[in-house]
Image (cartoon, rainbow, N blue to C red):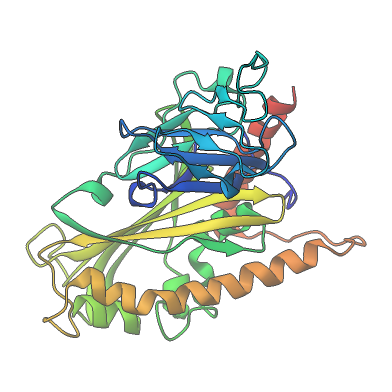
Length: 352
């Protein structure tokens, strides 16, 4: 595994649609690219290189003026929604240099999510961001986390999400136990909208649920269908369906769709967002006065904190020389090894 690398030529999550309000500047770093973004008066989200063309001032520190232009806080260079410099206070009569324009980044807004392509725009081709329809659907209650800075390479999170044998011991007592880690796993590879994906499928019958699932869904023993899918280097989708034995696919079924976005800041930091989705009419097993989505979101941060701890500890080890160390892999690691191969091939293609 390369713990100091990332893919540039892909779509990454820049934020939820609600994070981009008119009149508000959003500045962030994606794949070591400083980016400034805002929603224009016509409702479109635009993104550009976040450095003023004059003296490298970060434009995220600037302001949007009444006429819709972005003003740099250092010397007042103003940029319109196309990224072109349209005003320089120190020379109001012009001329404005023809090179005074911000580099644009491709942006797509869909399903309540804003996506950005930080790599070579010529490589977008037919690649589209993965779909996440539940987030924008009225049939689902969708609750999104705040963006979480993680001091670890984003690959570590992808591998964590595909490898749930760590549910014991890391999550023992909430979403995991030894039996959970021993459920047989099937691995499926496919390409959707130009994105190579890897999915793990775990099915169990007459399975005794760990505490959180028992409290969320209201069932002690269930049949269960559980998938984790790296839809692209930017997004992992988790789906769980549970029901009393023999009742999967009926009105008794309960579960969730959980999206995790992993957006690299640089080679050892990323932004993690998660999006919990449950059917809007479903209630919590522990407390039917509360919706299922809200009940899960109340407990889920405990699970996230355990994963954050593990990711940080792993990343710390990459700062030290290997001295002959190499990982030993087991059968349960098949999916993450396929992911490493896919991301490695994407990086080789970029380098070429």
